[in-house]
Length: 337
Ligand SMILES: NC(=O)c1ccc[n+]([C@@H]2O[C@H](COP(=O)([O-])OP(=O)(O)OC[C@H]3O[C@@H](n4cnc5c(N)ncnc54)[C@H](O)[C@@H]3O)[C@@H](O)[C@H]2O)c1
Image 1 (cartoon, helix red, strand yellow):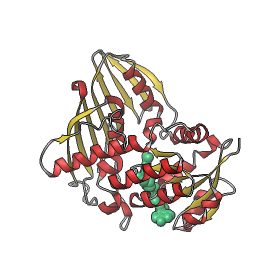
Image 2: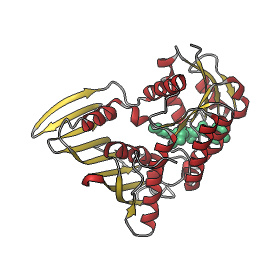
Image 3: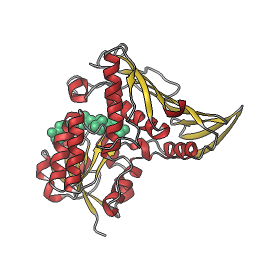
Image 4: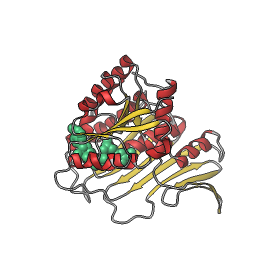
């Protein structure tokens, strides 16, 4: 099989994380081009693997690639992904898909018309600890799940002039930009959302225009609850990134700093899985390449990703109106445009 010629568009922090793991796939992937408005950044990514063309405008590389990985500021996701799909390229697009529902629907429609893969880079869905927790919950290995809590505590402070400080470019605050991973996971783990609320603040993160700290509580069908606390203002942390899934016969803990999935039953603990490294974007890339090769729908496709964003937009709306958000009709098995 010919190797997929990939173009990386946007060569900042996340693109470097991706590119450093491409060597796991060199039998079926070739980095054909690296693009950034800052040429030194494109060059730095191109230097990681030999032979990549360097450009400052993505339109210069469209004849050289079969697929693109887009890791751009959020307000550029829609126009650049759309142009790439229309040029017949498969697209792996960093989260969140786009900054408005209309833009998301347009990308989904464009990918369908072009018959090209549109996959959203929700890398946590491909993380072994996250996947193992999903399998254990679905198998009811520790009984029925009734509460999943997800904590993400980090210090994220952008330098002056960075696009993420502008809420219009970011598309919202910390919940939209980063919490979208965890709303997506709560939907994946717990099913159909019923109602929920978000309380956010930028107290403690004054560099953020919208919230830098988020608390989300969602009721799911069957009386299950999901909770997410995320902050970009942590000056210290014990949780780091941690998930607790309370079930009727035990508690499952995904502890990311320790890279372990742990089962707690009474006062006993059992390590169910240990992983070797923090980010698992190589599994995500493997899935993207599989989807291109087989035509299968990505696990993190456009419609699924839009559902999580619609939950966030409804939570934001309700927060502004001092009400509880009605989230019915937005489960991963319910709504497809
Ligand atoms: N999955 C994850 O864990 C994760 C983590 C961080 C960021 N991200 C996502 O990755 C994407 C990029 O974020 P980042 O943190 O790497 O940002 P960044 O600011 O580090 O990188 C963005 C890059 O895009 C370049 N750029 C801007 N406009 C451009 C244009 N018109 N053409 C070409 N290049 C252009 C900038 O020069 C910059 O190098 C975002 O969607 C973000 O949400 C994902």
